[in-house]
Image (cartoon, rainbow, N blue to C red; front, side, top):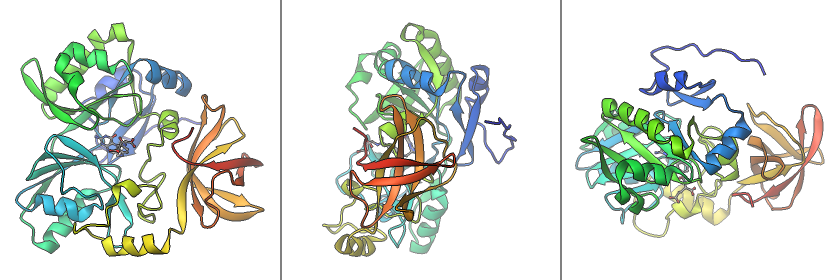
Length: 369
Ligand code: THG
């Protein structure tokens, strides 16, 4: 593969951690919310995969930007944008929420944090949710304030994140439940920390507001993390596909609805909660979906996906592959595919052309087992 430099600019924002990860050997970036998101370090993809599954990594995920919605109509606006019922939500909890438009098309899939009744953070995937929120607020004449606050997330991921974080913040941090958050002190500065992160290896996300203290904490985690074999890392292609953590813009986008993407458990159509696209989703549910996001396993040892790749049966297109990687665990290529009706049945045999050769794949459910 050729390696081409990325041209930095103000528009392509750096993070407070950028200078540190560049000293630590970052080798590639992607962009996310108009910001740099590290995509690899000096270790190979497989080395970092095993490291993440056994030890602990610190990730610069500041590109997961916050959309802060506050004011007396904040809750109504947040609920208007998501098909997940937030009526029983609680302060100090995170909620994974599909954000949809009036047609039921997905706009984003943030982790939503309820700071309090009148203040929410939407920790967004890669689309300009803030513009959608502002447009709705203007149209609805809501009394809300919508900003992107200075919050730069640092994730601590991997099984040894638990002893590492306990060493820094004390025993109480291990009481945090999955998708709960609370405030913890580091050398006198308060930090919001959630038990969450874009891996299934366990860990935390530190929502750094006090940059100075956050950078000290970053350095400290590496200093005292030596005994846990801490390394810098980033969201991991193999791990996230195996774990079926979906990526907006890759696996789904505005042309897909939450029922097609398997987000059924975050779709509440049976009560009085008011959100955009609700009637549309009811219609779709009644009629049945016309395509479905699934997994695929392909007998092959490598793949590089930079655009959708056609999936066929007897040379007829029946869908497309949207993400894929060689999995050292399954010892084959695994991928995320969108498959048209009526072909979205598990164990269906399909064809895909990789490196000019026709390969055989089998459809399966996600997460992969
Ligand atoms: N953390 C934070 N912000 C984020 C992400 C994150 N913003 C962008 C992106 N990631 C949003 N996408 C996801 C996708 C999946 C999950 C979180 C964010 C996730 N899902 C769990 C699962 O699938 O098992 C749990 C969901 C649930 O049931 O509540 O964690 O990673 N801050």
